[in-house]
Structures are given as C-alpha cells and as structure tokens.
Length: 396
Image (tube, rainbow, N blue to C red; front, side, top):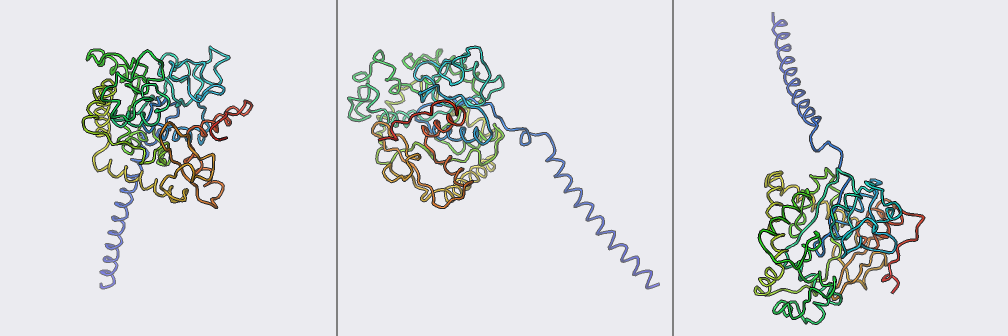
C-alpha cells in the first residue's frame, strides 16, 4: 500500500512539473507568435529617401548618416554633377545638376537617396526619385540658425559683411540687407523658408504662410527639429525601420564655443520678427514633430530609446576616437578628416584612435568624415571612371 501511495505521489509531482512546463512553453510560444506578426519592425528598411538639407540645422550630421547607409547597403545616391559640391544651390534644383542624368533628360527614378544641398523644386526632384520615396527635412530655432549663419557666412553674404556683430545687424537690418543684390543674401533672411523653395522676402501674410505650410505637409512625410536632435533620430529610425547603428552619429560641422554668440533677449525677439517666415515654419513643425513623436512612443519609451541612442554613441566614440571632444583644425592629424572652415567659424573635427583593425577603421572613418570629403568619396565609389572631385581647401 505504501508503495502505491508513493507511486501516486510521484505521479502527482510529475504531473505538476508537466503542467508547469506546458505553461512555460505556451508563454514562450506566445512571445514568438507575436514576433512573427507582420508589424513595422519586421518590414524591410526604407531605402528610397529624399532629405532636404537645410542650412545650419545639423543637416551635415544627417547627410553623414545617409551617406553611410547608402554605402553599407550598396544604394545609389544623387550626387552633384562634375566639379559641383551642391545640387545647384541657391538656384532652384533641376535634374542637370545630378551626375548621371545630364546626358539623358528622360531618365527617371534612378537614385535611392538624395541629400545634398538644393533649393527644393518638387517637379524636378520627382524626375530623380522613385514614387515611393520618403521625404524629410530638418528645422532649427531661427534664433540659433541665424546666429550660426552670421558667423559661417560672415565673409560671403553681403548683408553680413559690414555688420560688426549680429546684434548690430539686427538693430537695423535694412541698413545692411538688400534683397536685390544677389542670391548670396539668402543666408541673411528666412534661409530655411528659401530652402523649401519659397520666397524668403515675401510678407508674412497669414493666408500665404498657411498655404505654404500645407504644401510642405503634403510633400514631406516628416520634418525633424535640430534642437531635439536625439529625439529626432529616434523618430526617424522608427519611420525608416532602420537599425540603431544606422542613426548613431558623431556631431559634424560643429563650431568652437568661442565663436558662438549669445544674443540679448531683445536681439532674439528681433530675429523672430526679421525671420518671421522661418519662425512660423519652425513653430508649426515643432508642434507637428512632438505630436507625431507622442503618438508613436510613450514618455517612458522615448526616454529609453533616447538613452539607448546616446549610450551607443558613447560606445562608438570610445571605440573610434582618441578624444570624444572635437578638435581644432590644427590639431587634426588626418587631412581627410579636417573640415572646411566657413567665414569666422572655427569648425571642429576628430582624430581616430591608432591601431584600429580594418573593419573598425572603415566604420570610424565614415562616421568622422566631414561633408565635402564624404561627398567626394561617394562620388568616386559611384562613378569610378569619372575625374574625382577636387577639394581645394585640402591643398592649402
């Protein structure tokens, strides 16, 4: 009898273990079945992309991200034709500014990625990009955007040349600004509005502004905000269905803090008035950006994904760079990593660690490569039979 009771007890124990195992298996399978659902995460990454590269808005960093993605996925990029470094800017974009399209005006839908500076001209861009292209751009608070432009284009824009400071310029901008002088002055007034293909000297009439904003919303799937760059990369990554490393970056084309001006509150208000079109453009898309971000992620998810991005950036900086802090031009060893110096700005760059293996060196070089050198590199990869791009400032 005792043997029978022992057998029953053993059977009950075994049965309980079996039930527990079944529950665990069901839970495991449940997770697996969820992962197999055809959701956004498992759809293929977006590879047809048009990025409207606005000026002084962290757009050089995004250009670097797009160039790296293009090269790593063997995609084609719409690059400036011949010796050009931009796609016709500041004139309206037309297809002849793209290498590979000049001799065949009927060639359409040829490139995967378009991201160099241009003045947006939708009908012409459509001739270059596929129908399913994802269009996006980036804006920056006009107060900081104009401050950066003033320093960077100080010797180039006639409106800035005679003013000793941006505060002085803003105190009486019409003393320095002449809309009819040349296209060089587009950097001095509503430059982001101009980049979108609109008249930067137009009156800020509400009806006119409303129609232009609706036009941007109709043509662009996403407008990012440079003032919240990491949050922008989180949203961009989700929309493009990319991997984390695809959107991790090192800040490029950044200035030394010694060349950054701190405007008075009065001057900041004058910027909003002087660049009223840019200000309304920024305010509108700052609102839509946060609306889209909050619709896609909870506050906790956003915090976690921003921290994941920053942690990965720290890891790659430790892996790639001698010092995570960018350096002055004279302290950058590799001339291919020395950035172009614009106006009165002191543009910084990076030194790579020594002794990196071939694969790591390839990754790190691409992440630290300044815009002009990267464009020339992409051009040589894509058009090996053509004369390489000449970067004159590297010869000085």
